[in-house]
Length: 69
Ligand SMILES: [Zn+2]
View 1 (tube, rainbow, N blue to C red):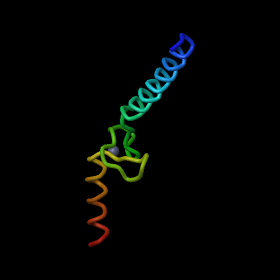
View 2: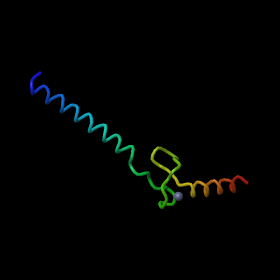
View 3: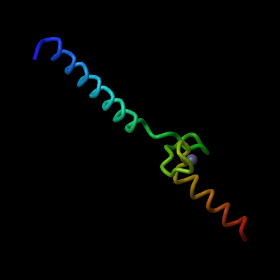
View 4: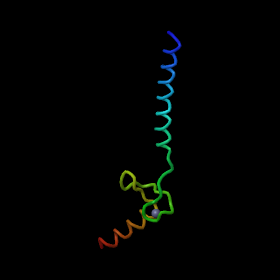
């Protein structure tokens, strides 16, 4: 195995590790803020990138209950 070949393998390995690190970073991105109040962190997902906090979820379910009465 010559030096050029080793370098190529190392480069590929480094590239692969960088991509993996990017995936992990994306997964650890801070949670988005609640789409309703924009103050609390949204813990309940409405859609892929829309989340609401528990306070707003509670509030909305209360409104929902009132409307259905
Ligand atoms: Zn909220």
